[in-house]
Image (cartoon, rainbow, N blue to C red; front, side, top):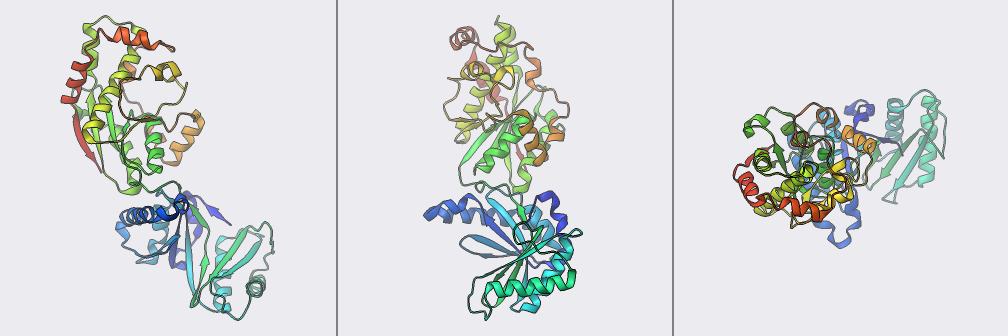
Length: 403
């Protein structure tokens, strides 16, 4: 079967050829008797994402058929649905009358649209309704003969360049186009709500995207160095969050927490410079956990990647223990940097993520301890008024809605 990535959907040619789009589910198929809530949520997500196009839908047990209001909507609908979590792949289809002549004519047109010089082909027919007077093999042979007569293209039954797949029903036939790969996973909204610590670097947008692919709705918390939260508005932070949310047309809360309660407390107290980063990360986790508690969010999400930088050694991650009460998920923990970069390019956050931005970590010591002992961290931190600085940070937190 021929597959296209979303950025190659233009290869489908003239969208006026197609009449419907079929959406096939991903992990939902494994849910057995629990499938209905997942399929319903996916349908709701697709309906929301396709609001500008106002299509109609036919719902089936294992797929969704989209009937566009206009043939001009085929390509943008394919592009939109191919970005939705829970979608395995989408297929543009041409609905035909139940006749060999109609099938052959449509097959020739599709081959000419997709083929490069000397591309081989194969015809595959599945008769969902068995009453048609010819067998699947006989139909395949007839259409193959007609296509060869019209195009002189070579046949390859084992590794064809193009497969023409026909699905025959009682009153009509579907000719399927190339499959457009979706992101898979589970529909957003089927696994609860979480809070993502969002720095604006390469990793945090990728972590948010990955946790959404597991069905979570995510909100965001960002720690900033500005004198007021309004200064964040023109930075890359809101734009990056919109990039993550836009395919699903979702809204989310962005909690903007100031850095200065932490820095002022550190200035008043003599603390080991090499432990400052560990203290700051504990401050972030403690504050994020309190926000999640207040907002009734089930887990914290970080872009931590094991041993990628000094703050992400096992010892530094262990040093965070005791600052949060809910689960902390790290979707990128085992990724290497090229894999993360590849993912961010796929979701179109890489360029913005790499633009200059003065984040909080840039103000912390450049040579942090890579293997701090937790007991040493706790002992040194006891000189800080952690309760006061956390409460001050929460009091000064500003909340925006990103949409």
